[in-house]
Length: 63
Image (cartoon, rainbow, N blue to C red; front, top):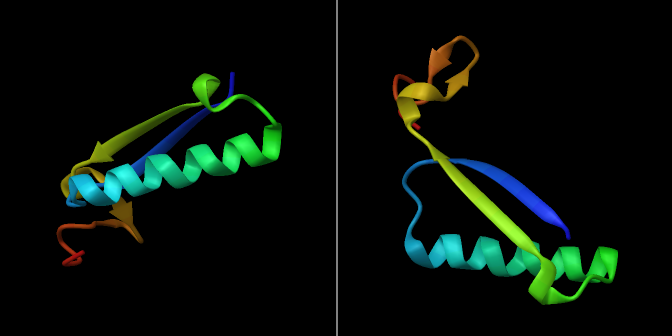
């Protein structure tokens, strides 16, 4: 059973999340030949205050 775990900074719309799930699922089906029903995608949103870039938080960098 293919499983994809994706970390994204918070702030994306529900529509964008659906698109990520659909496209990642499509890619795993194509790459592994697994049935779509067996594919799992987990998106974990990370607060900008907990995402570090070059020693600063994403929030502090205005991301």
